[in-house]
Length: 234
Image (cartoon, rainbow, N blue to C red; front, side, top):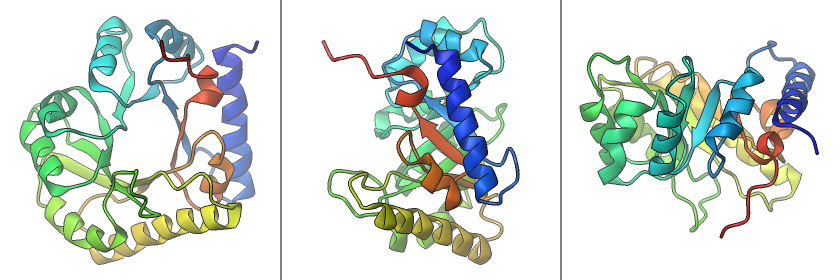
């Protein structure tokens, strides 16, 4: 069985190869290790292999790990799961990135509850790119109004867009979904240059990161290929 360090090396090489083949700058795509359901010891093993960015879906589980790893400096915590209104305060004060903002109410709460001594909270807007009933996210049509409003929230830095396309699509359709998100980001950046950096596309996972990188991803969110198969639910 390969180790977490070996897995990180393998995924990193995949990212580097895909970046090169896409004709993009080396280092322009970063690995976000999706660590939901993984133990603090698993994360320590990843950190020992120089992985510092971790994505968490469940707030209480994340807080427990953040506390367990408080002795390690430089961990970059990203919240990537659905957000309930009653959870925004802890998310706003604990994480440096949130990839799953899908409505103005949540963005406003995150901005209001972000401590002023902290840097602005980096956020991505989650887009339901295939308009699936089972997934959260705004539509492409809702993006312009959302971007205009969020641009006024001083404690947020609007970094870009996130999506989880339907994984059962044929590759050509999957590629088209990623491309639509990339085009949407470029259009928003041109229309609203003062709304935020708008420099980030959080898309691509273990099975499709190469396609996502070819279409412009800057963060790929990888769990299974970093940590191995997810533990069975008890």
